[in-house]
Image 1: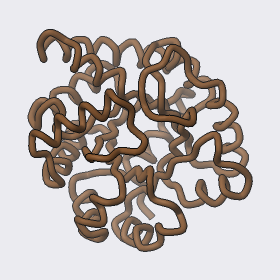
Image 2: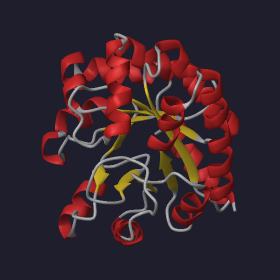
Image 3: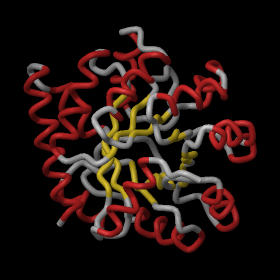
Image 4: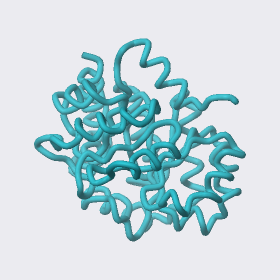
Length: 266
């Protein structure tokens, strides 16, 4: 069975003995066209893979920074076709990319259609934070049929057999949420993140990527010491939101990406 660009990335980086830096941005933020410029700035700074958010009006896992970005995207009229357009523009850069989406948009679009169009755009997989493995059978079939990775989220509260059951359903990587809570930048990465990764490693050989809270070179370096991937979203988005101009925001995004890339490569 053929591998996805995401799976290939983790194999290649393992030979380099370093973690992947994964950048997150919602499709359509700050606008449909500018979103692609943000991704290009991340990649120019050294981001290895991109996680594209499907903007959603009621995100259970997202903190205020990403919620505000998603709201702005939705006001701009971002829909499924725009998400796939951003995905295609990203993979055309030669960068592995996944979509993070709540379950409702996939269900509305149609499972087979979503998997087909994601694959057609060169996407490697889908992160589904609110889909339980008990309800994931039809999605597993659709994803497998189109050769895309299914990425589920585990948290510090995911214990014992449950951890084994969830990670067994993951491919590409396991998304380890570093703390019980929502996305956002923090002064320190949760102490529970390293313990969670260690527990995941006991039950699966699938790479583990840590998200929620990483925003500095030091934090990226710390997480890269025990995880296979470091996911950064809110820190990038906040730079765009708080900059005096979009051009200034892009420059800051590229600078932060370079700092974080240095952190994971050290």
